[in-house]
Length: 127
Image (tube, rainbow, N blue to C red; front, side):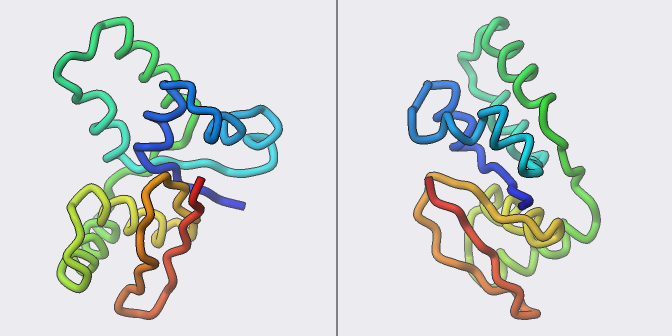
């Protein structure tokens, strides 16, 4: 299965929240493909009071996952999702990236299932 981890999954992992720890286990990662959107890196590394050590830990963690670049197709889908669903830019980027890559979004947010203009269903895995 292919998953796209939302930013909150990484925040909870770094805070050692037990609910998300299995998502980072060797067993889970060996059986599933996990990708991230560029917005995840931006959100995690842009906290104003992030120390150099914390920045290094986050950067090392993110390097374990394939980062999907912001492609023109993802930009276009993000625009459409924002127009039709009036969601925040980071959430729209996550959703558009997942739809583009046929991945299930793994999130801790209770998000309504979105339908894009071509009726593809964005699946979310809630932890």
